[in-house]
Image (tube, rainbow, N blue to C red):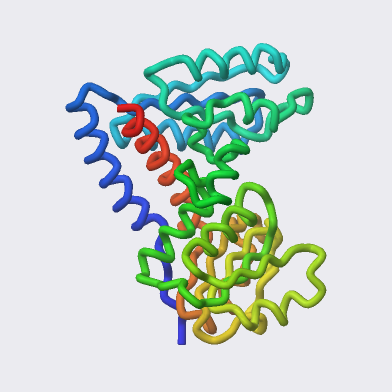
Length: 282
């Protein structure tokens, strides 16, 4: 058998259409959702991400501002800018693009963002809300993964989910979201002794380590659902994920491609979070 693709581009288009309709309804009440994106330095990948985020805002009818600063901007100046955006009623979401230049304490900058405007879901208050099942903003990438599972009508109740990776941005929040849906969750990482033994038990596998071919066909139970969060380059320089796609798609029931899988969903969920922030303030 060959796995069914979970198309992140198609799902993103559908969700963005829903966002656009909700933005129109909110504008009719006199509120335009606003996102501020702060970019410090000239990291090439960050510039691409930021451009895509600003474009997504404009496409859905939201208001967006992009603040660009040179790499020598002091941490004190950056914190002052964040504080001004916290106090700006036209801004409902604040995103400081990571990584920041080395002289900045990234966590300190993230903690300076008001939790009410933390649409990236990286603030410690957002992490605490996810942990305790309280309302808050979910980090966009794992949130997008959950929407992909929802889109195929997959019930996680009683299923065994294995998350490969334990980052604060994807791995840990992903595990908590799966847990909320009554999955039994195992987190694997660089200290896991027998990764294959773990993944062969899994009904759902989320690979999020940023390492090529970390998951191969012999590590996947027939019929498992595989979500590939990785973003790497192969020997030819083409984008690829953490999963050996060609092999695993012959074993899995569903699989996300790279590119065109989780990537577009991350920006879409940022739009959803920004919209929800504006709806709360309205």
